[in-house]
Length: 444
Image 1 (cartoon, helix red, strand yellow):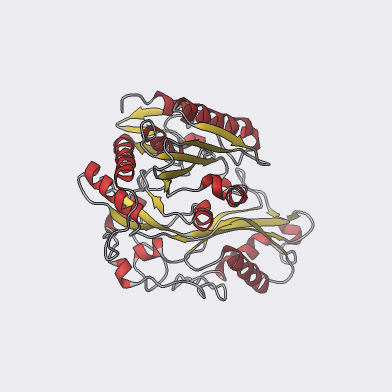
Image 2 (cartoon, rainbow, N blue to C red):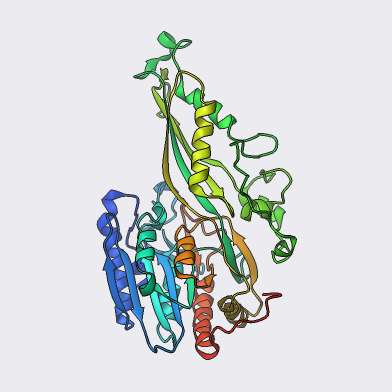
């Protein structure tokens, strides 16, 4: 691309939403984006929340023209561990055709593709950009529900995901939901010497191990929470026929593993996209420093994420999980379960008119038709937008599976950014010329 300077400037702002010390930086990113959109003729406004502002911008060129709402987020994940970055996370660099920086793919780089595509768009455009996606979007759903008319659109565009593989344009029509819990166990009222009290004192770390062993079957990989699979919607065979083929050996090489563990009886792609999961994401307790310290900790804890599929409900799953943890917790421990955040799973229509127009745009730019995919991740607000606006949703990922999201050395391939901008511009033109007349429903 000719001029990457604005994007590199955007990426240099350390807008880490989970870090209170970065609150002003998060706001600075919102203001930067607002000014960029104003320069393109948008009317932009910040809506304050108890944490980080929501940016809304609109440019209405013709009341008879179709209207597109673009959703994205300007906040990013923490960059830790810093020592594993090859270049500083907020000093973006371009090397070998890629931008390296925190937020390059998730989601500043992909969001910026929509900003670039907006320059001469012949349709009405609205932008809804939040600064809290990485912490579960706690304040965006109420804003969406309260501003249905302001956000009303004929199509919703979201780029916050990945293509199935390099050089493979991809339209995503499904996202898993999320239920995220923090579990804390307390034993004695203070840390204890393991010699003086070992054998009589409760050990919360040991109890965490027992709890983990009772959450998932080690042989079948199935979650053991009663009722966990009760609402899981099976995947029709005709839908699976849409899916691309997964190169399992290539995936093993990428991950550096010899096997792909998971739920017994389901192929890896179905486990990734259409089956629920439970994973511990962190565990702590006791002494973590160099050398030894013979201590029985008073407290230990873990963080658990459960990815959900239609028709599972995050609140219901949280209640079932908490009840199960209390039922299997050994005596002598105080158990606390905190619900951190969640999101509902989503399925959109892969045959909707805007999806068909985007498929045409992608094929024209990439020279090959797109593949259709679900995605294992979660974008919490998509379900809210789907319910509140009733507009067709187009999920167009411009990243790649190896973009190191939430990890050191996050990157975005420039060829995907450039072709993504071209496809979005073509989509806008097709939408202005042809509108959203329905097509045949038999195939994408």
